[in-house]
Image 1 (cartoon, rainbow, N blue to C red):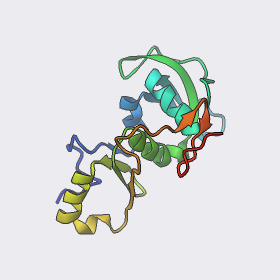
Image 2: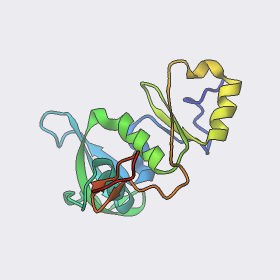
Image 3: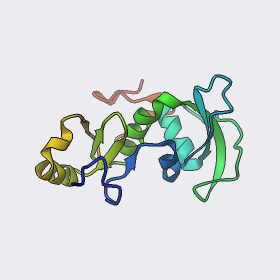
Length: 162
């Protein structure tokens, strides 16, 4: 039986459960050897990846280090960053919501983004699959919602940024 977290071929529902799966979103994991403590992953970034991380961290402008390789997922690299290896699932959830997936389904192994239609179909066909998962509905999918204005986070409830 295919379950939402294991159906790797379902195009509508990307699954992120490893650093390598961040490549299509502009983040190319390189090595943990660059961190003396083995706690962080060195990653090169494309323009898309840099924008994602600027929004994830609420940064006003790019403050990333020089890139190590020339491309990320066949797109020019614009910088690099070392990321805490424990942030993968939170970062993956953010990336999928940022990319307007209406629903994220998460367990301790990975995160899957999907439309509400796909979620409802899976829930109907495989209700037992969601018992040990956290389901998050994107409140602003397909809207003009802004995460930040001039590097300052926008308050999600009021829309205030000053």
